[in-house]
Length: 99
Image (cartoon, rainbow, N blue to C red; front, top):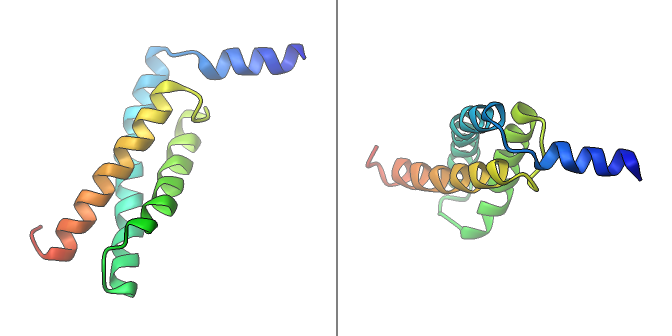
């Protein structure tokens, strides 16, 4: 029980290091999510909102690898959400030929 409590306490801690790593993860997660979603759009030949779920997972895994914390941390959750949103916007603009 003590180890679980300590891990939860460590995981929930929001410090400058976590915020900086989350920002770096946001950029790299957006890049990885955009590539994933754009390739999906090329294969399927249309934008389907259901593919945002695997895009969220891709972005989350990238951010989790960089920060070492799970989505119960507020910075990781917000970064993952923003990376997924930015990936969708960028991929949609690339698919429409606007970028």
